[in-house]
Image (cartoon, rainbow, N blue to C red):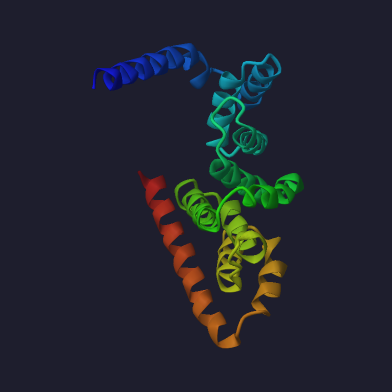
Length: 216
């Protein structure tokens, strides 16, 4: 019992030292570009923990390069504990940003995970993208959802792909129009109208709540 208590105290002390050492890089008065460069400098100087903090913070803001770096750092265990599940998550997000290196790496990570965990992580990706669309008003997230269900998800779903491509077009991503129509040709005609109505509900509800946010 005493030994267990000692371990807790030791771990807490370590965490507090880590937090103190990193507080100057978690809330910097820098542009995202300068902040990213500081992360690269930390990495080049072998200060991997500090580099990881920078890239993690920027990834939360959707920084493409930071997401790519996190995918690799989780995979190798650099600056953080090696975590293939987290690496897969960020590698998929990286792939949705158009990075072909990440897309090719997915099979390598899949080989290191059991099928249940692989599918479990795949469920997280749509949740992240839907949150980005609803909470951050990110219309590109809707387009990424369409692409996810059409090309990348372990469980390809053309109906959901058509749904989110439709939402993205309504939100202003007009380059998705041809892709939406191409995917629509793969769906039974009797289902198209229902999916269009679902897309309209998502889009109009989003517009309504965004207007309410602006009014406040």
